[in-house]
Amino acid sequence: MKSIFKKSAYLYLVISKKIIQFLFPDRTKDKPVIFVAGVQRSGTNMVMDVLERSYETDVYHERDERAFNNYEMRELPVIKALYQNSKGKKFVIKTLCELQKLNDLMAAFPDSKVIWVLRHYDDSINSMLVSFRNQANQAKQVANDRLGSQWRGQGMSDKTHQLVRELVHDNISDATGAAIFWYYRNILFFEQDLDKNKNVMLISYENLVQNPQQQFQKIFDFLGLKYTPRISRNVHARSIRLREPKIIDSKVRSLCETLHNQLMQLALK
Image (cartoon, rainbow, N blue to C red; front, top):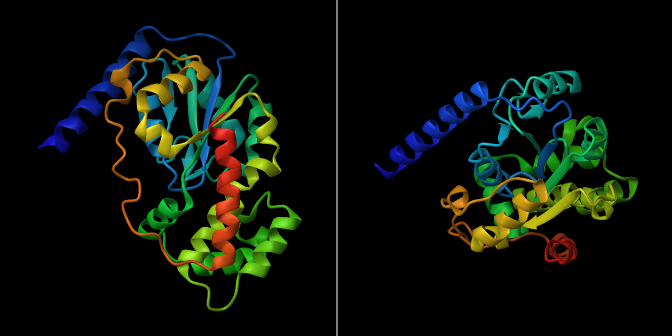
């Protein structure tokens, strides 16, 4: 019953928001674009849902066929057309399969901003193994040919690809494959120099769900949006350490731990 009520309330929000934006559209020509980024199963859906609750935003989830095809963003002219027709104050779009394109996307939309969500690799791996299969095979494909593995290997540096080739072996487990994926997609944050970009905010998923009002106030201020506590009232921390960590190769775990610590230093600034 509670779930039905939440879905009904969300549907009411979306419909009422569309009506208000239709009647009172924001006609700013060069409105800001917000890219919500991160590795799959890092909490970006939750961030998108909270941003959706703002009456100032026009939000495009990865399930929205107007902007995405099989979870990948459509061609830039399609996105620009949606942007130009947007009636919200801020244009928000998911960018998971496009992490390697963030600099190009930001250049295409001046004054855009990025929210990159970082989740601890153990919880991310557990969630991946529930939602996605064949992580070992995907790791092998990337190791064999990074350019032939669709978006997964795109933008990967030679150094990272060589490391992946060293880590992948015939008997690799799905858990270790998922950990390698977490590593080589998150390392893009540094390889694209996003740590030096003032228009990029790195946030910790764990901090976000444990202190939603404080953290979302910080995010909304960064994005130039009005924040009220009701917007994040459904955020909870029950997904933290929900399952025991999976066994992964020790070298891979060490790499993930080092990268996580480096990213967390930035997220906590």
